[in-house]
Image 1 (cartoon, helix red, strand yellow):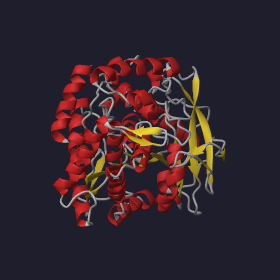
Image 2: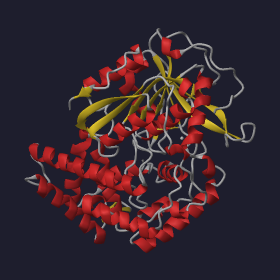
Image 3: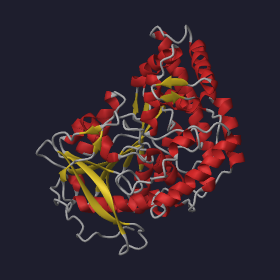
Image 4: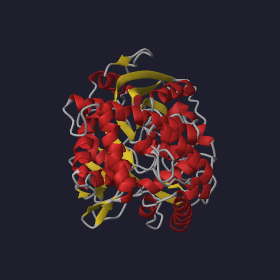
Length: 492
């Protein structure tokens, strides 16, 4: 999933190829013609992490592998890094090739996510090998590490404290991951994606991108339009927005999602209040209390900042709204366990107390993909605008990590134009808090080859929202090549 504004940095989270020693595949996956076997050596996965942050065993038909890609694509014969892959083999005989997923972030592990979520894409898995990967700078693929500074950032108490910690965070990232930092941007990742296509033995890339994955897919289509097979971009991101525009737009989206949650909660006999205004007031009062009186949870504390993340997390999907009601109600009674677990799921904290690279990779990729470097003062001004829109999302301690980032970013990944590619299906949800519908409209126009599908329901990610209409339209395109019309609209 694409991250909303990270509370300590106010940065949303939410990209010409060269060969890797094998000749391009000789047959097209878009026609259903059998494809080459590819060059990946697949073996049983040994280091998967489950949703609870604990080690997980691979399911049937699940294998892992690696390919080597250039650290710097401008030097294809130079130093290489490993890209970690996962595959769930097609269950049917009429195989179309591979369908590659990026589930969002930036910074999310595709290896762990596909291992957990493959059954949700079961229709597609009958005819495609479902494939995902940890993008460069993420987890197993030279994941960005920052000296354990992420927890300190989450505990910042004021703007000056946050700015100091942001400097220390950036310096720790440079110390621990300086080699990869200049090369984690989305354009470099898109070039990796084309090497992955070739290694899988596919002449064209069939791709399903969600949230930030829509940005990676759009950049790929911009750089490799002739290699685009069947593409679906769900919960589209507009890369041209500034940090401030992104922050305010997402704050508006989460405000609307919280109002929808409150209305639904009241309709279901809500523990948090008798009307939507009362629900919102109850949650705000809970957060206010936590500023001065964090809740003890075992040997840890549920702080104001962690509780903010916990409130935001269930707003991504209507199916998880009841979790917010139950967790907030429990915290009001003095039990912060459930809210802390929600915050941990957001930040990537594992059962052993260590963190995945989700949040550190997020910052590295965000800073790589823009030349913007908002100062602490500019970030504080953005925070004031957020307070006006959705106070629950505003921070007590804000700073811009990119202002202190040790390597420059650039705006190359903001240029989108897939002229010459096959049609690309773009899906936008009217009730999406993290990637609002207007971004799907703008990305469709930028692509030049986009076909927009509108979902009128709630949540971040339309395909897995439970909408049979969306699933039918996507499956018809990916499995049968039947392109939806530009006017396709799916009800909530």
